[in-house]
Length: 471
Image (cartoon, rainbow, N blue to C red; front, side, top):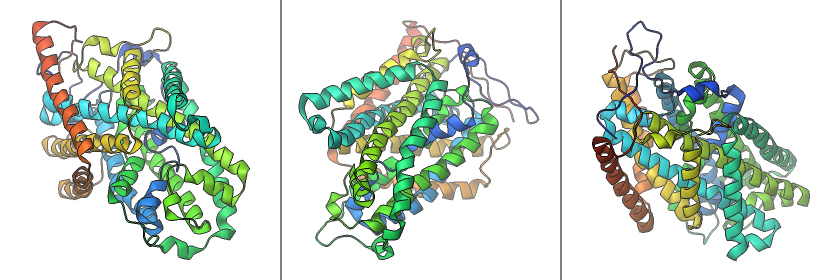
């Protein structure tokens, strides 16, 4: 958010083994780093967390298009985004992530605006997980379906999960492994039991007669279930040997996520015949009861709660470390980068992200998803542009991982998801557009306010100076 920022960056030479940017703080170096397996599951929960929430794709467009969506969309969206994240995160390590990429490509204004879009889309996304969790819980405990009990359940679950995040990223990483195993297990069992009952002709059904296709819901469901791969870039400074482990973890998480979606979807669509309108969020639990019995339904409903916990923890970690990274880079006042004396976690970031998400938890679930997608789309358009421009502007800097394509092919690879991003924004409702425009204007005002604070010395900022990249 400022033209003159102060902290040291490693100079790059063509033959140097150093990376162009390292914003890891001293406290971060003292804390325990994330190893490969916890990182894989943390990325998995940044994006998916299991097949929970994929049901509206069938409800909105029918079985065939839902299956095709989860088969094709990863290749035109998830894989390119993961590859770009791997290249840029290992080239610019530290907790700044996508803010650094936009800043290095187009300057501090765009770095600040990227931070606004990504942070707000992140906290909106965080707000959806307690809602998703309660949607499954109300099937076991109907008291949570509406009114004060529902509001209190969202409030206390959010606060409790935020405290768990406060206890440390390494703990969150290992919790993510346990949550991933337990929440995926019932779907593996269900898919195995369903095999003898599968009727392949159900997979090619275009949908039930009389049910109108809802393209807005369909594409937002696909997008919401398969995006946010770049969120983990704000945690690179906390990863053990990021040049090696980060790309490996990303690609392992892509495979795990795709299989976790498509296998249960094929199993349930092929073995269960119900009214298409019943495929709303939470239907997988009902399908499990039809396939195997009440016991598996309960397990999946418990798994949904555990998955929501994993999703919440992963997203909250990214948002809180994003604010820490922005403070390290002097995009935000120094106060935003404070860490806990006991757990070395960014407690200010956790507190602010939790407060924002609580404020949005009581919005309509579809509006929550659509608003997060719209803001995220704006950020991703800027991210793709930053990636292409950095490749063009600095073609020879050392990149520990490099997407194996030359510039023309990279532009084509980015163009396809960019078309989809524009489409997602075009089909957004007026409410979503108003919310997104208001938040964007707020981000622009925030940039100039922080710039004024810097010039007037009203607030303290980290000393950071950005040395130019040398090829």
